[in-house]
Image (tube, rainbow, N blue to C red; front, side):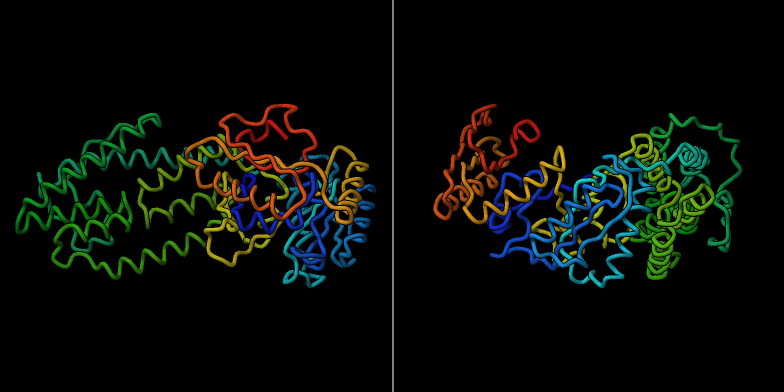
Length: 443
């Protein structure tokens, strides 16, 4: 899962401002636990790396000054580098953390995990997604392309030739519904797009011809279409065909729907464990039932593309946010359950990190946050609310935030309504910056 992108709307932003009142907002969230609202100390889990002595010191100090119970401090033992492999993340961070939380009976209590400097930052792309898996996909897909090429020839004869079809259709092979054909030349993988397009074209023409037939010839043609749909497009395609064309009782849509649901459930059960080539082949064979050869081909192509452009890297923080989410795809993005439009409740945890260039800087951030809570936050707030027309509503929220802060805080607020972003050295005495138009360029 790639790093999650948290969208914060106005009301969430106002609530966050009550306890994220520090320049450390972007790095350390040192003022995460506040006496005047937000998270309770008992709801925060502090995680440090026992292989890093400074990480341990920071964790204990932070928990002490924030009144976080000692049982809420968990020490994992991991490499001290910023990056960790997926396998080591599972064995050194995720699994020990789950066991420790469950042993301390904290699962129902914890809402936020605060990672301390010394805990790795990035999960590297998964090493288990290797060339062997891609080769397995390619071998299976070549067989699929052969079947698609043969099906094109079969489809071109529907409504044209009328051979005797098998009495027991469910137990017959696709070729049993058609006259013997010449051997189809083996296709090349580069022909995949052309073959699937041609099959769709021939199938549509075959259906048109079948509609125009009557009597026994229509029955034969429908039986051929039924066999083609089942093999090439699966039960999903067959159900769709049965709804479109008259079939004289040759389809039991209710029974097909039950079988389709059962096949999907079986696939969902097998999917998480399909890690080696033999398990993968079994899964792909099973997938033919609901989606057919063409559907499996499309799935294989998408998986090969994903593996060739591996997107399974992630931040440790975002992976831990999914700690109670069960099994989920590791590639690309996951839907953000904390987004304001998503149904509640969800299983996501909030994550924060106390980190910086050195342990001394992190310690200063913690102490500065305590001082600010006593003296109040000084400096200026810069809010960038001008720019793209497509972000009109979000800019409106920023303007409302500026008005709120100007009335309810002691900060000097500068609201920018121009298209241009804040330039370098144009925000002196900045204590807060809110905006997205130059993300990653101006902090």
